[in-house]
Image (cartoon, rainbow, N blue to C red; front, side):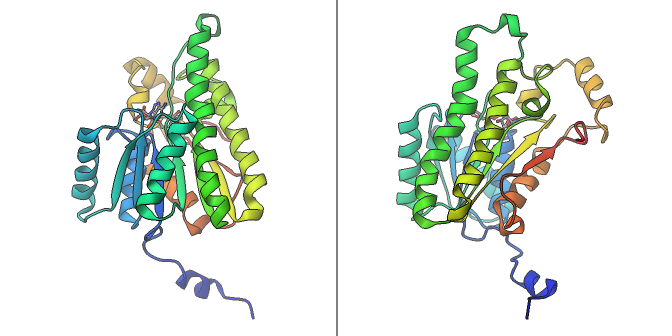
Length: 270
Ligand SMILES: NC(=O)c1ccc[n+]([C@@H]2O[C@H](COP(=O)([O-])OP(=O)(O)OC[C@H]3O[C@@H](n4cnc5c(N)ncnc54)[C@H](O)[C@@H]3O)[C@@H](O)[C@H]2O)c1
C-alpha cells in the first residue's frame, strides 16, 4: 500500500539539513545572500564550507562567530579562499572540503558581481569580467562539485541567477550581467537534465531587489520608484532568499529539478 501523506511527513526532520555538508560560495559579507543562506543552513544542522574570493582568516573568524552567536550553537564550518573564475582553484577548494568533511551533499552558488552600464559603454574587459565570474565561475564550481556528486550518485545544486536573466538588464545590471545570468539559467537546466539519472538535482533561483550591497548603487529616488513597482511594495530580505535555498537544497524539494524559482516580490509574474 502507498504511504499516506502523514506517514511521508514523519520522515521529514525538523532540521532539514542535519549533518549535510553544504558548500556556499559568495558569503564573505554579513549582508550577502550567501551569508543569510549559511546562517539558515546552520540552524538546520548543516556543516558548512564557505568559499569566497575575499576570504581570509579575519573574515573566516568573523563569519563563524557571527553564525554561532546568531543561532546560539556551535557550527562545523570551514572557510576557503577561492576565485571561482579559476577552475583549478575550484578543484582545490572542493578537494579540501572533501578531505575535511569526507563528502559534499549540496552546493549553493551565490558568488557573483554586478555592473550597471549601457550597452555602448561596456568595454571588452568589463564584459569578460562579468562573464568570467557569473557564468564561467558557475560552470567551474558546478563542474568541480559534480565530479564528487557523480561518484556518489547524489547531490543538489542551487545556482543564483537573476530577474535580469529572464527579463533583460537595465536597472541593476547591464546587458552583460543579464546575459551572464541568462547563461546561468541555461547551464543549470542542462546540468539538471544530464545528471538527473545520477540522482543529482539542480535548480536556479532568480532573485530581484534583495537588500544587499548590490542595491547600494541605487539612489533613494531610484529605490522608491522600484519599490513602487513591486507588488509586495518592499525589497526582499536575505533571510527570505535563504528560505528558497533551503527548500531547494533539502528533501522538501526532492522531486524538483531543472526549475527556476522566482524570489522577487511579484515584480515578474509570468
Ligand atoms: N541582491 C539582489 O537583489 C540580487 C538580485 C539578483 C541576483 N542576485 C544574485 O545573487 C547572488 C548574491 O548576491 P548578493 O546580493 O548577496 O551579492 P554580494 O555582493 O553581497 O555577494 C557576492 C559575493 O561574491 C563574492 N565573489 C565575487 N567574485 C567572486 C569570485 N570570482 N570568486 C568567488 N567569490 C566571488 C564576493 O566577494 C561577495 O562576497 C549574485 O549571484 C547576484 O548576482 C542578487
